[in-house]
Length: 376
Image (cartoon, rainbow, N blue to C red; front, top):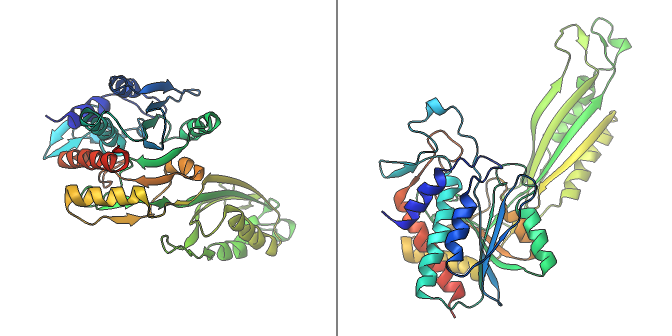
């Protein structure tokens, strides 16, 4: 049995549902410490973070990952215990196998293999892990990056182990992610009886014109790497539950996933303009879930593409689709950030799994990337 598979199983067996780390980082730290890594446990509230670094000077290459997982859902719908890793039909089944304990295991074993044959590296090698990626992501990577910046430590190359692949490991890797702007809009009317509409103000009617216009908002991508940005309405709620009452308020939630071509302020201004145009009585609360980023084709992307070609024999496709990731906290520091991990078809699902062969190939790809960036 391979070291990567063994370690993945050990990590999956720990019930590290956000924000609980359940001892995963301790296992990783113990193994890295044997290779001379300096270990810092940076914990904030219930969230555990690990920063492990090797080397005294030079650019930092960092593996970035998370040890927390989403809840398993109904246990009786799983074919096996989600926290008892099981091999079946050349798959490793268990919560977190793909997202992302398989990648974390490959981080560690690739480092061990590389340093065993190349103890003197050019630059510095680091691992950053958090137990708060699947949750609010407030006390995780964002705070660790703040801590590192205050110390004057800057990551040059960051590889995030998120599950990016489709048909086989390495066929897709991410070079960027869209930003996220969310809003909660409360439209105020005046409650009354449906038989006397002249004595009330119906916020649903008042908002209908703005709703139609908001749903048609788009923002063009000028980078050539992202889809155009569109506004999506995720929830509308109004009414008292009674059919004879005109409601007094309407609450709406919306989200825009946007490329670097558009700033969050531009999106906010465009939405505000639509609401002002329709002269409705409203209040709005904003939330910026993350800034967009795009990594240029440079040393890190070259190392990733060459390594995938050497190990798998395919030309990988770079992508920017999907949701946000913790890479959004690292990219603003100027780091080159890519995401490369196993298949994502089963993530967050019942019977989450990863191909065992993909874990082995991911390990080999990571070793190759280390060699290309850190060879003295």
